[in-house]
Image (cartoon, rainbow, N blue to C red; front, side, top):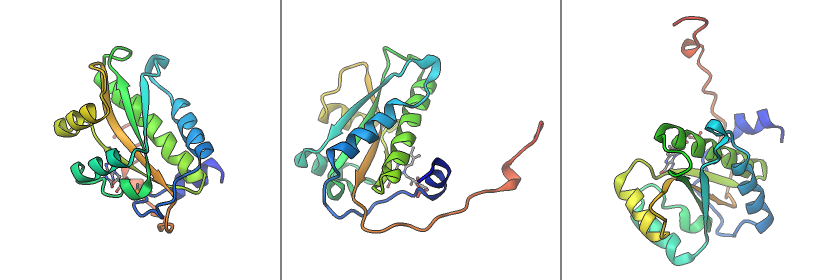
Length: 169
Ligand SMILES: Cc1cc2nc3c(=O)[nH]c(=O)nc-3n(C[C@H](O)[C@H](O)[C@H](O)COP(=O)(O)O)c2cc1C
């Protein structure tokens, strides 16, 4: 799949077979995350790979919009290091770029994935910080849930010329 096709056909996948993704695919997805652009090239991301059944179940119970995580079998919590990037806007932008890279990599590998939000929900940040024993300077931003999809989803064309402005509004 080429990059344009991947971008145009990616959808959030929330239904999984329950079969774990292969370790080499997990590694490829993580590598894609590391390749993201970041402000001043600070690369302030950290990745917590979760496969522990009890932890996945705990997330499923706590996170209202991450009920699919147990069936997926793998989640990657993408965190930002506040010591490496102290501007929150940049920290969120950098880690979000990493998340999007990972979603596209998963799609390119014919896997299903969905971005689950964490920051800036205080209760979710608190929950993940405790569950994963995160250090004080490490902020959980979002979670990539990835697994073997049951089926593809239809492509949505969201192109909207009215939202494009040339040279001025
Ligand atoms: C910051 C952010 C947080 C999101 N949080 C969740 C979530 O908690 N659970 C979920 O199922 N989807 C979540 N999504 C996925 C969106 O619902 C999804 O991207 C949107 O509906 C568009 O659909 P698509 O990804 O299939 O194109 C999130 C997306 C973003 C960018």
